[in-house]
Image 1 (cartoon, rainbow, N blue to C red):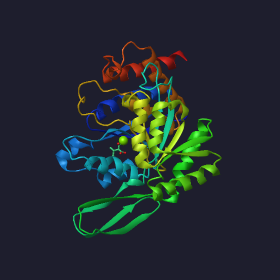
Image 2 (cartoon, protein in one colour):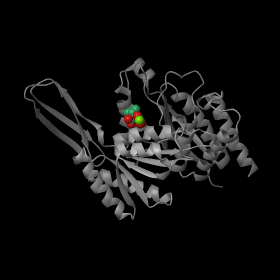
Image 3 (cartoon, rainbow, N blue to C red):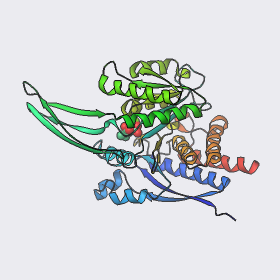
Image 4 (tube, rainbow, N blue to C red):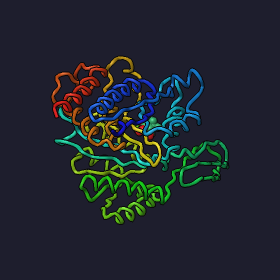
Length: 379
Ligand code: IPM
Ligand code: MG
């Protein structure tokens, strides 16, 4: 007899509604495991605002080493009004993305049954492939009030260590800030390759690159050149769209889009826009994928205003769990979760608050988990 498959999954519920939605994503993943013959062993980590305020600790190196021993990481949300913006987002979320070189931020925007769309379209099925380690997210920069100033900077990625200095002189002196965006050829090539594979898996032979070389020619002109070349190598057509115009067309006619490849910052913006277009942040799933530990998290934030009220919608976290199961190779279980979510939204009389119903975060998770168990026992 072969041993039952067991996955070791690390879990960071985080702040606000994070722990509530992760609890439901976990029970749904467990239900899928029971139906499809695998076990999940969870390891919980306390990182987030509460832990930081109590202990001063953000995300220690020792935790990074421990996390590395897991098959995946499921994360709820990070961010709390009691902590200055940036500390936890950069110290936990971005740190994890960079440390584990999760260079792909995959954000599907798919409409779901009975979830109303705010745009004129019958359905939306778009996937944002967002570069996740470079661009303006490297946090290289500084501020100065002087005439001349120098900024030393340092960053480390799996492929390189970057050290540098920027010298600026203002005449007359002015208070100023500078932030650098970086793109490397290897960085653009690997994410373009991933986007091409994503397009092919959807039986599509083109993708759209969100760019802005008419105004930011250095970095995004470079992106266009490298991405076009890489896409051509994969036999995929890469059309370039300026990100502003792209946002306009996404609202007017989302059905015409499939795979959208983006640099890090545009991907952050476009993926929230698309979550809105496809029906709401409560259903938008996300994944941070790399060669090492990959991390699965809903696109939404910690929503402190509704934390603890039961009104959170766990669907985005549950669907992020489905992306995680697919990543682990459990395709059948992943499809079962997606089907159960669609069945629940399409047929249930008891919808989440976000869609005008009164089903609590717990009840939504329970109903979806029950559907998985029922479907499998019917099969
Ligand atoms: C996201 C979030 C993060 C980002 C923040 C919290 C740093 O907005 O995952 O989209 O900008 O990437
Ligand atoms: Mg964002």
